[in-house]
Amino acid sequence: MTRGSPASPNCQKCNSGALYLAIALAFAFLLAACGSTKASGSSTSNGASTSSTTLGTGKPDPTTVAGPTTAYYPRGTVRPKPTTPTTLPRETKTQPVPESTGAGQQVLIYPSGIWPMYLYANYKVAITWTNLTNRPQIITFYQIPFSSASIPPGGQLVWKSPSGGVIGYHDSSGSEALLNLQAPSPIVTP
Image (cartoon, rainbow, N blue to C red; front, side):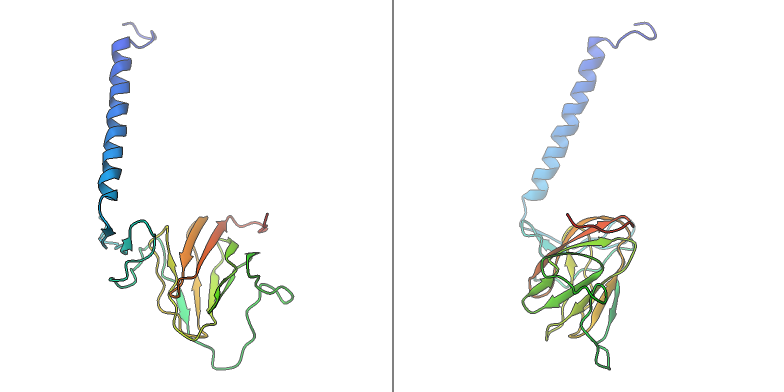
């Protein structure tokens, strides 16, 4: 074969064989991972730990403690209930936090669920969850290794994401919601 000539048929067979082998190994790995009913907490090569989940549900394994986070996903700051009376958090002076879909940085945890259920937020600005229930709450994300510290009734969790993306999460009561973390620009809802 000369320089600049097309690859020989034998070489193409080698390349496609390697591709099939890589696909087969990836498929075998996925099957092996799906074969168990629980995934346990573990440490990564850099010493960061991950939390346990019950496979198929995306929810934390109830037999383990809320998992720690990695250095990439900061834990956030929990603020206690203010000692002086305060007003209900709002997105702006005239815009309350909506129940269903909203744009901004405020989330309210009610006994009946999380408001808004779908939040468009700027990922470079901290998001604040306010616990309006009468019991402590923990926020746990599904797609990333993050579980907050316990948020007391009336308290707040302030967390800033290191990157954008869509992240599903739930609170200790089982209420679920989604964050759509967008680049810093005017945040719009569809």
